[in-house]
Length: 423
Ligand code: GLY
Image (cartoon, rainbow, N blue to C red; front, side):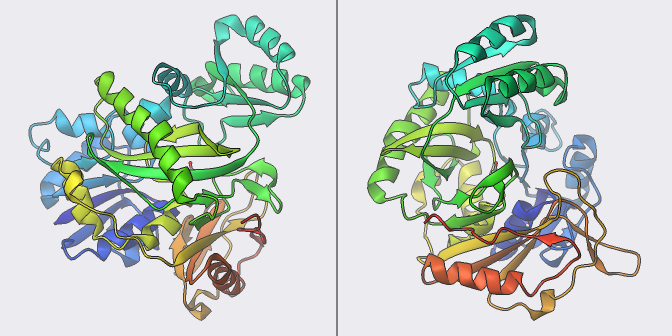
C-alpha cells in the first residue's frame, strides 16, 4: 500500500516509524514530515492543511490510504474533503470527520456532549463574550483553583489553572479579547479535580474499538509538576495505577457512554479517540477528548503495540475492527522530551544537535529539528526530540531514557529529570 501520513512532529515520527515496519507498506510519504520521518519514508513539502495540493498529490501518486497525525486537518475537515471529491473518495482517510472532530475542536461541544450522555466529567459552565459579566460573577463565587478552557484549538495553550479569583478574571478577559484568536470567544469554566492524570486512547471503526495501552504524560515544564503547561515533557506506559479494574471502569463509565452517545447523536466517529482522564479516588473523569493520538504519548504507545498498524487501519476503513485483537508488548516504555530552554515561553532555535550517534537501546523521535545549509541537524522548535526506551519495568525504561538523553547535546538543551517520579 502507498501511504500518505500528515504531520511533522514527534508523534508523526513515531507513526511513520510504525507504519514503515508494516509488511503492507510499499511506499510511505509524509507531508510535510521532519528529518526523522525522512528516515522512514519520503517527505513531501506540502502543508498538512493544504487539502487541494494533498488531493492532487494523492491522485498523482495513486495513494491507497491517508493517515492523519495532528488535529488541525481533522478539525478543518480533511475527511469530508476527500469524501466529497469523486477522484479521491475511494481513498480512506484515517481519522474522524469534521463534525466528529468537534470532540476536540470545541470544548463547549465536548462538555455538553458529556453532560447529555452521562460521561463523568468535572462540573462546568460555559460563557461567551456577550455574557462576560456573568462569567466574572461565576468566577467570584467559584472555589479555588479554577480551570479556564478556551473553546477552540489554541495550540495546547488554551487551558489555564488559576489559583486566585483575580488571576481567573484577568485570564478570562485576555481569552475573550483575543489572546487565542476566535478560540477564546467562548470559555468553559470548570471545577478543579485532584487526582492523577492518565491517557487512554482507542481506535474505532465507529462500531467496534480497541483500547491502546494506557499511558501518562507529564504536562508541566518543571520537575515535580511545577511551572507552565506544555504539550508534554515525557510519558510512560503503562502507569501502574491504571489497574485492570480501573480500566474496566473506564470502559463502562467513559468509553461506552461516549461511543453510545456518538451513535445516538448520529455522529460517525472513525479513527483515534483520546480520553484525557483524571483518576479521582477510584473514579475516572474526562478532562478532555482529542480526535487524534497524543504527543508524546504516541512515542510510548506505538512501541508497545505488536500488531501491523496498517492491518488495524485497514480494519477501521473496512468497518471490521471487531475481528482484530490488540497484541501488546509486555515491556514498559518511557520517553523523555529534550526541549529548548525557555519553552513553552520564548526560546532560541537553530542550535546544532550532536551526540545522537552515541545513543544505544533507544528510539529517537524527532519533534522539532531541521537540517541547515551545511547539513547539520539543528533545533527548530520547543520540543526537539523524544528519547524513548523499553525496559523490563518502568525504572529500567527510564534509566535507559536518561542515559541516552545525556548523550545528546545542543546549546540550551532542557529536559525534566523526574519523568515517572510519581509512579
Ligand atoms: N500530550 C497531550 C496531548 O497530546 O494532547
